[in-house]
Amino acid sequence: MQTRVTDQPAYLLHRRDWKNTSIILDLLTEDFGRMSVLAKAGRNSRSKALYQPFCRLSISFSGRGELKTLVGIDGSEIRIDEHHYLPLLYINELLCAYLPWQEASPELFQLYDNLLGQIHQHFDERHLREFERSAMTLLGYMPDTAIESESGKPIVPDRHYRFLATEGFVSIGATEANAISGKTIIAWNQRQYHNKQVLQVAKIVMRSIIDFNLHGKRLKSRDIYQQIKGRT
Image (cartoon, rainbow, N blue to C red; front, side, top):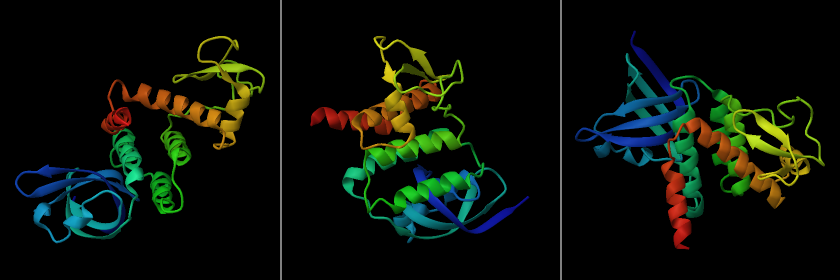
């Protein structure tokens, strides 16, 4: 059946050239989740300035198969500070890796929209970690971090735990490797990101979940960041 959709809110996650002058746009849409559209002769189009990340888009498309044809696009650019560009590209790559194909997730679209909406106010590692956590929760990869996984009992402030991507927090001795205090875990659950220990736990936990579920795949944006960091 021929599908035609008009004025669909969307953001570009990734683009790739196709044949001589066309472009395939990988998009996050409000009603259709992650999907791809073909912009015929897109490299020569008057709208090519919109075929970039971090533009609020309204698209129209049609087609029968999985790859739809773009028939209309409008939008506005969101100005991004150069220091924020790479972390946001990492978020785009993360969504490309994890979002199911053409499965609506309006909550995740809103989460992304909110993130870009606050980019001019303030954006730092706290926002990145909280986005990772919220996204992984919506996608079903986040274990319950308020409990010890084996007993199901609440995290205790004066005990210590280790995080396992397949289980969550498990109780261990205070002197064991990778021990995390229950007090810090509770602070993380309360979003106390001003605490450096909380940020470190957030990074450890989210990297564990994301890397485990990538099944060996590497995120290019993370590698680029490490290369840049190594030069400074």
